[in-house]
Length: 252
Image 1 (cartoon, one colour):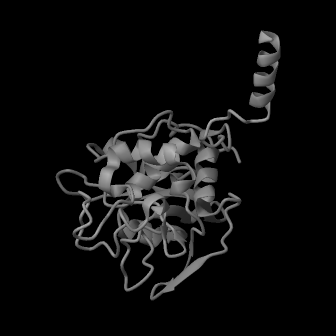
Image 2 (cartoon, rainbow, N blue to C red; image 1 turned 30 degrees about the horizontal axis):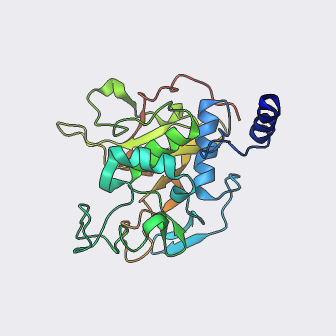
């Protein structure tokens, strides 16, 4: 009887009955895994293409078509424990959440429940740093949930402002050259645009960058868009060098 039970358990495991609720890693190459996870956040096929857009005064933008956050609650909740309100929990007054924000367009706390990854029909990713951390963690390229990441930059050696050195999977941060080097925006490089051997722009995937209505980005939409070299320079973007796989090659 014990042998029969053991055999049944082996069969069940083989067909995935007791498989982990967390997703399988999409690549063994750390950089490629990050890129594919970004594509997965955009749409479940993880092919990098776009079938949903938002049009605003700045143009037409590719955005997520599904609830990426809610597709794996284990990862969502683990990283939420670090980021709290920045993990797609902004609320309006009076709903009992500690994440009250005057600029929140709706209560993501009570109105959405386990649909916290949606606003209307657009996939949401939380604040940009939360989203970047979640991508790294879910991709398997960060072995565990990290403290708020990328954190404040404390030294010039923490980043590279030469975008000719960019590689797919790099983490971009905007640099405030003040006393604390605070990082107000974070994005992940998914494709390098070149003219010959010269980098002309970086295709990125991020959250809370694209405005879906009246220039308001609080809805935390996940989007794929181009950052030209001039835009990268104008807003003082740097490549975050403290990521664990920074020295590794990209293998598509």
